[in-house]
Image (cartoon, rainbow, N blue to C red; front, side, top):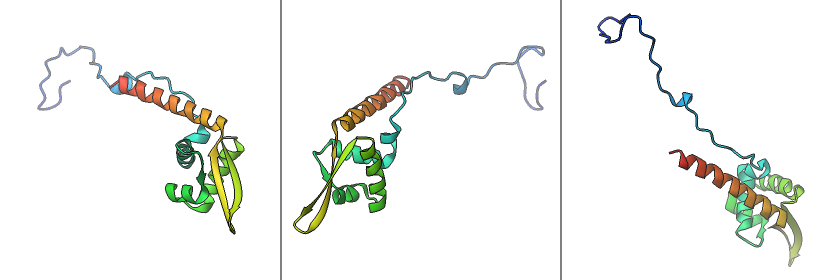
Length: 128
């Protein structure tokens, strides 16, 4: 039945037309299971910074990531407990210093994370 003021050129008993929709044609890409320990924003920042440096002080990381002492401590501890980074505490003169380094297993986990992320990016860009 045609709406008022609308002229249809279809037969009165014709089957309704299917509307094309992106939802009806989803792209099938394989999304890997990301390492959720690294995937969190602050921990990703820590691991990224450490991957580009031999080691960084707590103070430098805090300034770089623009975070608080407590927030950095919590996230660094999680990475340390997972064996992704090492923490060494020492004195420089009379001042206590804390330095973090990426461990070999942390570097492997970060490399795997980057490969997984790159595979998703390639899959999505291939569909554009």
